[in-house]
Image 1 (spheres, chains in turn green, blue, cyan):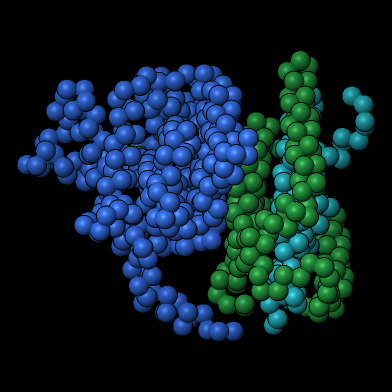
Image 2 (cartoon, chains in turn blue, yellow, cyan):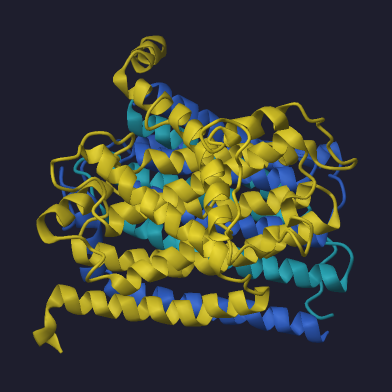
Length: 164
Length: 333
Length: 102
């Protein structure tokens, strides 16, 4: 799979992730974050997870990026960045953590962990939806409750803001 | 590594590439966009007992759209001071790309579909959810009050009507049992057009997609008489064309999706080829949406949002219940 | 290079970028960007492992559907808090917001 589409998507994702953090203006950062999400969705499509890719586009780019842009536009421009010594230490920390996790992860090859859930070649949309409804129906209901709680929380915060 | 260069060469010389660029891809979208501009103005004019565009050619002004393009290209490109150039220009360009991507998902005829994705319908709707972001960026980047207010209004409106849009399309999915657009058309080949069992869903779909496209009666964000064209106010000549283009492409895309979901897409008696059937149905829907523009007054923003979040949401849930009973069969009551 | 290794490498690189942003930046919004990047890195990792292991399973996609929804909720509540804080103070420098009250 190390062909053109994977290389292009991976490059776009990583480059826009770096841009999202390093851009001077937060609006550019938010837009770069959106492009990074689009790259991740493309990688999902490459991995035959097409429904999850569509879900990622609709939720992350369609909703989260809009929220971030909205907040950035209303909060306004902010301060600059900390001195260089702290930056170097953090860069080193990030590199060390990534190397550690990377080594640990690459030691697990694509060996088989047989379990009750193998679907072989039939891992398609039908399989995903039957698994979701049959095996994970209860967590799905709890997810809707958590969604309701988040909406109520956000509305309460907005109301507190207007009163205060 | 399997040679990216030879992959690119293979891609360019295939019929796939021809489909993307010429038909039903980019060039046909551009020509049809120009054509629809004339069509809308002529239709609106005739409804209002006027004549409409008639100067640009001997045959009823049919080249008006192309004349507009040429005129707009010659205008001066003034970008407001303090405006964010990158987003000012890139937002309409991205909206054009999104519109073209929408049309790539639709089956025009058996075998003529640029991207037959297994999850075609949610992919279409997910790409539609990208447009509020772009309108917000376009409105903000002009660095001026009217466009920003227009951008915010467009954001609220489009976000509010996304959920009824998804839910009314959900009724179709429940009945056909597939998310693939070609599969939905084939279901209608065996079981009849879906507009009959899903009449409520079809009405909801047309109403919510008109709101998503910001056409009258839902065109408050670009209200010509109220806030000076809203978020489009600061766009000069050639960029204005780039802003109007996506509006018509979205109209074309939504009408094409409606005819695929509810009217059987390219199906029809074999006297006429399937592609002509498809265009006939799409043009009927486009005429209907254009007639909305001439018939209904503009809806106020708070009315609009309230209706979107309460009435339309309730009706789409009712539609889902109806679809449930159609699938399960009436004895399930 | 095995496909799994290349997807895993992308995921680890994104994780590193996210951790770097989380520890370095002091603007609350940039920290939120980093958190979202870490979420996406984890999602990519889960889906890659679920699909490219032998035999492939579908549970990875189920989990990622849940985490995408939860991450979106958490981002919206976090953004509401940031907006509220920026109305009360002027500054959203997280190093100065170290009191629980007021």
